[in-house]
Length: 136
Image 1 (cartoon, rainbow, N blue to C red):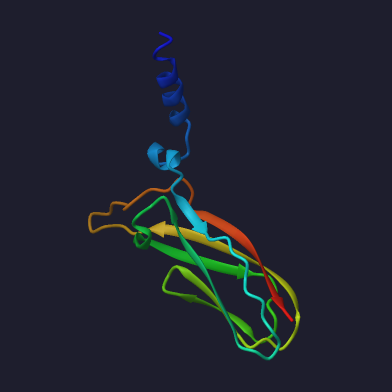
Image 2 (cartoon, rainbow, N blue to C red; image 1 turned 45 degrees about the horizontal axis):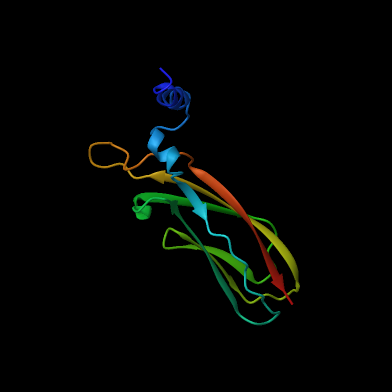
């Protein structure tokens, strides 16, 4: 009986899991916004920076739709664009100096194949990360 106890406990744990596929939670398959320090920018000089996203522990990152939302105040002259489905692009020519905290939110949904099947369930379908933009 002691020999089977870890297996029974593991099965019990997965029976109450919110994941569609227990293995995805074991491997932590979820969206990820890469940590990075944004480059220092300067007033009246062109600025461009990219924040990238992927699905952690998933080789088919492109089999998902990525939906971004950026909140927080950006300096006047800087805009946000979404490029190639997996990137947030911050660019423009800032006309004011300061420290600007922004939050990037990401939600992903998997594609469905022609038979209506999901290409891959996730343990979590959203994430967020904070970034600091400094303009001098």
